[in-house]
Length: 153
Image 1 (cartoon, rainbow, N blue to C red):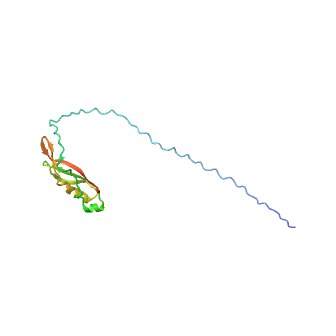
Image 2: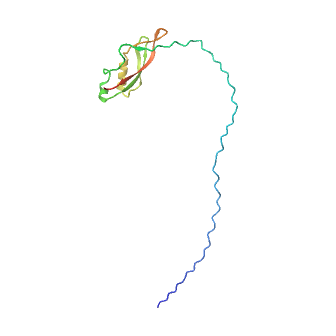
Image 3: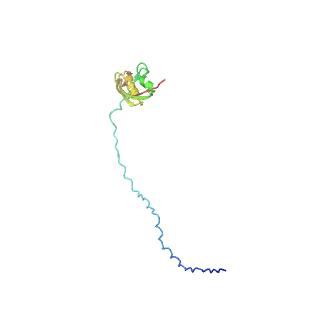
């Protein structure tokens, strides 16, 4: 027969841990002070003197009118390479209509997106003729603009 003795191990009692240190509460969130607007009296009104001009308003200028067939850049002006490439768009032209009805200083104000079409529009518009604008019964030069639409059919 075997005899076994169970020996219980002696457990030392540990002391409880110290309490946690005291922590300070976080400061309250910062709220900026409100903007304060102090109303001051408005400055006194200023006197304004308006004088009327002795010069009369110039009489209105009549609009010029195209002469002959409508101003259209037809198939004759459509560049062949632009047709093959399928280029289309609208070119806005600006120019001067002289007192004798000729077109001068033709320039592109807004491109069609194709330099070829824009150049063709300038070439097309150069020979155009107008009945000039009139002021006080006399023909006068005026600035004018138009759009040339390039559409393949």
